[in-house]
Image 1 (spheres, rainbow, N blue to C red):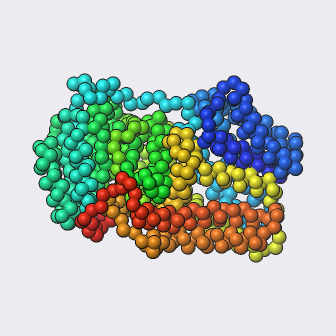
Image 2 (cartoon, one colour):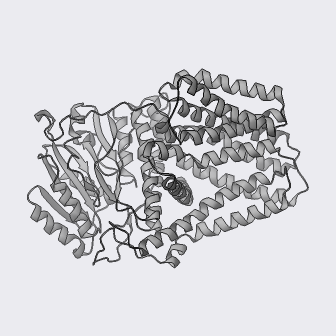
Image 3 (tube, one colour):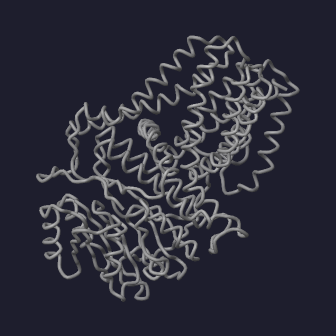
Length: 627
């Protein structure tokens, strides 16, 4: 039985890695001889490794291979919208993760180990079982874009954007919320809005809580110069941060306005932004259209390049998958919202750090739907400092946990749920959006703490159970495949080079601590602080760069030191190799944060072409706003 589990683990671990690497390179054959070749390469590679490392237990190995192949073929018809290479990657990943949990449970039950060690293994097994569904859904949403044969066009737009039909010319209020922003950045945003290829719109600028007149007076004067289409409001004290500003503007929006567009203060819109999207609202059930976030002034900087492509991964994959299943999200800028639907659901939620995606939940629950359009209609700026990048991501992660804790009754089965128009699929995906960060944070904390205790226990105890080379290779291959989860998406869909993809993956690793702290904060409270992203040029130093990431650096060094001690105490087949490997991966993620922070500091010091303009007036402004 032990050889059976080991064989399954190494076969599927190696197959998972092969499938993921092949998905990220070359064409995607899925018919004829090429299709047969894919099956042979993926499963044949895993089978060969299993035979070599598991001592060739042919009966058990053949049973595992036949079972995996049969399951793969049986499910193929269900996923007909996936090309073969993509389908193989998804199905093999799912099979490996199930096999890894099964192996861990079997090892926990049968290993000759003291009760305390078995209890620690039991904790790891329990956590692995609980997070498995979320991991499988996460992997699908991240990978689907690289696995599909194509996307249907969900949101038809006018064929002649410059001259849409009269019936599709609703009045639009473009609302630009500002708080302590650099005047020249906002002025550039307004100049781009003045050049929109659409005539039935207004622009409302709401500057709230900015104490320094030197920041908002130039913007007010520029609105006057741009003419009556532009209105400016300065509100000295206004609760609710960005949501409060948007509610303020909504209350002062004329009755003839049918659509609300939200544009962040640093986003420079393309001329076709309104003209090419208003036609979508011919369908009365469409409540919003969200376009892709995009960014400028990032070329020439390794740090900003990594950040840029890490941002783009979400919009190349996750957002498209959600939109395909009518669970699209509004994400704060470059979006249009039906004014009547916004009024119907009560406006913007001032209690939530992500008032944008929270609005999506209420609009879908009210029976509307929205679309994500994978096209760039405007570009903003990437935070110059890693601290700003991390602060922004904390808000994006903490906000969905607030949404889940406020709206969880909407996501229950119909018998117990709060009344809504949500379908079963919508409930699952909206629940997943907020619950995954809560569960992932708690699970990672539990696994890391348990792994540390298990490492110390195994290192100090007498020789314990042995772990076969097959199991070690299978788990290592699966772990490496998991670290490359963005590789196919970035390479095949987003179009990154290998270097750009590597930088984006490092950025994702560096945000591990931020994801965990934001997810754990979601367990503690539903009220939070709006952590603004400063648009002013940063003036970092290497000391500040390291100080900002002290916690990550200390944890990374400690994890690496503990892993080194465990490896020194281990021998071939020692169970210490597994927790040591986990700690090495965690230390790499933690140490990526100070490395990225130093990279940002180097970018700030270096002259980069096309960089952001320097501002003569860069006062100290608060970076948080209490809600």
